[in-house]
Image (cartoon, rainbow, N blue to C red; front, top):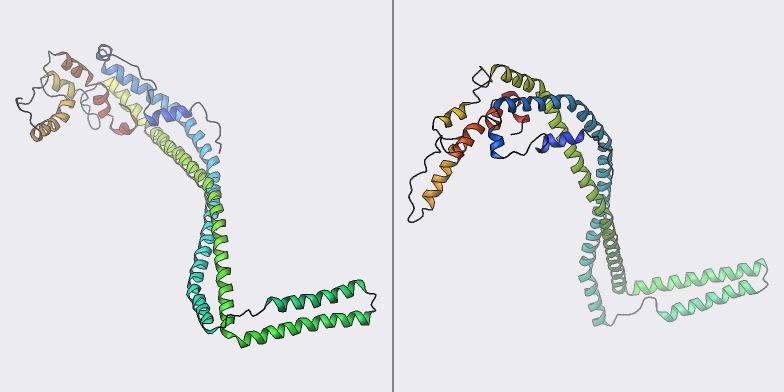
Length: 345
């Protein structure tokens, strides 16, 4: 199973989809504190412009790859379906043959027990009769092959052979008519044996068919997963491209007019920073405090005070990080309403 050679642009789509570290810098706390809202907004704007430039090529590449892979997936599905149909047919033959054969088993046993009790367990075509017939036929065949016979004598020998066969068939027919129960026993046993042999052969063939179908199943599953991933990434790339103009316009206005309240779709991105600066709870504290309080009620510790911890004050080191970093990724990202789904925090 092969795919067309991916282009360098395809890596960008995977990056955008999988939230990789493309364009990110590893910063310590001090470096992060020095990042201004303007710098973060400019980075988001640059990323959106990069997406707008590269996504059309990425989309064309993914569409070509999907078109190339789709017929192969269809063939893999069809091949697996045909293999499964063969397995199902053989299984049906095996099961039906076994069912009928098992149904005949009591009948065969009943005939046999009855014949043993009545003394009628005789061979309808005894060996001595077959041996005598074969000897006479061999003599006739030897005479035809080794003797210099004219066409009349040869015809006479052939007629004699025909008559012997007819006489033997007549003798067997009369013997069968004289032993109807034996006939039923022989016929039932022969049919049961044939059905069991058919079931055994169908089972062996089914096992072989299953072994042949397994690689086809694995190939189908792998190719379906591959094209499903391509389509997922393609849909995401189209979504990002559709958001590009709105997102670029959003961040251009932010850089021009600021990060406060600007009207519909432009909420105050610095609200969280202001709240922390005034002594309020950070976004993290507001989200986690109810859970901590609930946990404390469910499993209180002896000797510990149940008083809730006070939020960090403006003078503490941790609070300083919170107050400066709050308006960066989470806050600025939250206001990007038209392009919220396409940005990474």
